[in-house]
Length: 249
Length: 249
DNA sequence: CTTGTGGTTGACGCGACGTCAACCTCTAGC
DNA sequence: GCTAGAGGTTGACGTCGCGTCAACCACAAG
Image 1 (cartoon, rainbow over the protein chains, first blue to last red):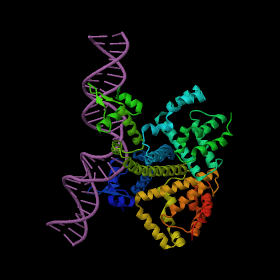
Image 2 (cartoon, each protein chain N blue to C red):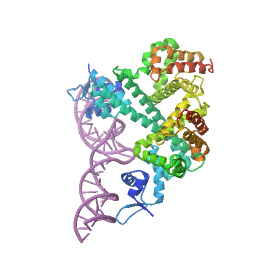
Image 3 (tube, chains in turn orange, blue, cyan, yellow):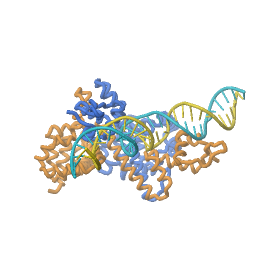
Image 4 (spheres, rainbow over the protein chains, first blue to last red):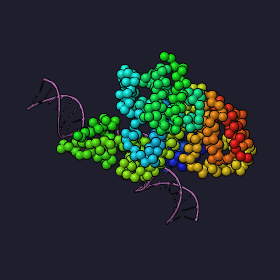
């Protein structure tokens, strides 16, 4: 009624090396070992292995897998999974951003413009926009924004940039599809954009509208958005104009 | 005019350990070493480091980074980056799928239904639908589909599932936003869905329409899509009806 | 009896560093 | 001038999830 390592490996779709590894780290021990020292697994082990593999498939580190499969408390499991969920989203967003950046780099290469490091950062290099920002929105706002940025930590900054890239990519997609600026999907993206900006500075109606104008009129901002696709800056501005109507102030 | 390791590390946002590591593997050597053996870097090294960090940020392995920063041929660089771009997209899609699956798992947990391994896969367990599929679409189509699936390899199967999850998530987003089924963005998603199905079986007009109906009428399929969000199955069906008009047969 | 197949433990490799450890050098304050 | 502290140096081991030998053992078929 029991099974050897090769058969378990075949049915579960893993290598026998993996099973030996799980034995070595105590994650999945054989039901018993034969007289010749060979590992023998029973049905309970197969079920446990399936549980393990499901979690492994979700990229949960094996240490966490162990604590999950060893606990009966669903609340604890949920906590662990929630953490993991957040991590997955962050990683996915980050990779999406990276993919977009690579695409931009490829465009640069194909057009013959050499890629320099400053080029890569120009979109969001804080210092380049700083003097104007002080003139435009006041020292106070800029200083508070800097403080917020510094307080984020490296992970937070990364997540923040990733969120922006996702929003811009979404707008670009709608620009390509010809979606109207008052479309609900576009307005939802603008809401995310407003929330994104608000991490550092909560613009009122006019300020937000002004920001939208600047995205089109200022060639540097315009370029930043056009990198995501033609018409992105325009669609964003048009959508911001509509969205701004609902803002106070 | 030169800089010590700590200063370079601070301005570049890496640790000094990283710089020592890059020195050890020959990726970034200091301009010179002081009389006391300390590393000193010049401006050229700073620029090279920026270039390195851009690539590292893209998750390019350091060996590849070395060949990129050491080559002047933009075509070679482009090839390397193109490969990497594809890899990034695949990984990002996979992580997004995993995140969605974790979310579903959390739902299960919160509703008290225990998560079992079969549960996790019920959405796309081929064997569960097989008998009906044979009756509905014929043995030929089913056999060819199986062959195609088997021919994909594990990586291909994973990518295939990830593509489906992305499409479903996109539809769900539009369902939540109330987008019309004839919206260009929705129709673009349906086009992807049709292409996705066509990996195994290219449905004609009526067959594709029938598939769309089934997504709503068959509670198992319906449930699969509703997991991505309320109204997902309905929007998908409505959009498929429109899309199907353009199909031959 | 050989050969082939598949089991065992043990150990190293991978990738990009993090993290001690043991020691050295420079600067600042008393 | 002495001492403390900050920060430099090399060297080596740890991380994570196995893949990949290596050396050896056990069993069934020809």
